[in-house]
Amino acid sequence: MFLQDYIIRIRAWIGTYKKEVALFVVVALMMSCVFGLGYLWGRDASSPPIVIETHRN
Figure 1: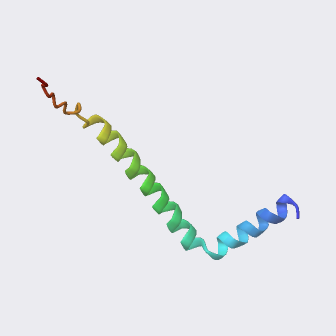
Figure 2: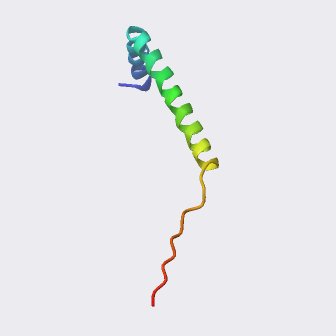
Figure 3: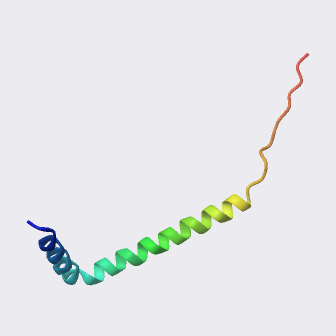
């Protein structure tokens, strides 16, 4: 099979499952945005670690 045959089959499959493909794309974009925003927010909100000092005799 040539590349064109695969492209035609993929286009036919996408045409058959158009709603499912669109839903997957929307959910994937939303998850990417939420992950990115959470990473940026968590990086800015991080505080220095707590250090407990112990004294030995």
